[in-house]
Length: 217
Image (cartoon, rainbow, N blue to C red; front, side):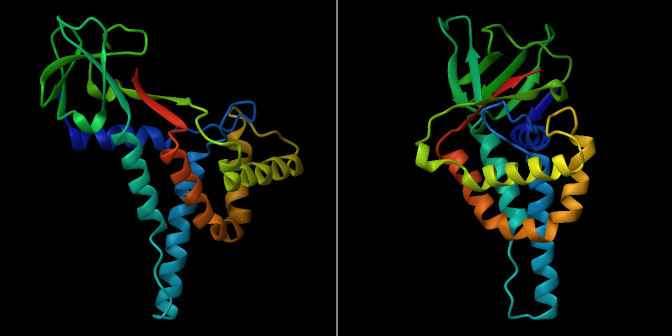
């Protein structure tokens, strides 16, 4: 099995888009599928407005979101080792040209410096039957100042809480099927106005390295 960088970026990007966290007890409220949907909806709205009035600028929120996903994946941390490595070395996914699975099920990464075995967070080689088995482990890293919190994302969380309460349910990863679609359909036009500020929050997350992405299975 072989995958070049573009294939890896697409596969892991799709995984990141599904990496929701609605658990309010976790460090970061991260409704990534909802944001994906909202950003593309806001872009579609601007396209409609532009058709009605060509002086209205088309706002490429969906494209900007896709670029953010690609950038996050490109900076995902990969641990590599060979027979001479005492401790795994850390590189970014963008530094990897391709992955292939050898006969032992280990992933071999090709970089400018040669070929290396891909190591997991536990220090052991990652073993898969196919590249598509790979996914991302997402860890919240608190490396930001208190005054630089993603405030609009937190405001969105408060909207989810109030809306879920009105539906007599709670916001959690186990109950998303009860509230995600109703909230989107009811609030989408109002929430679309928050997209520029939400984009600022996403940039804050990436610039302050609030999330660490690593490979897992």
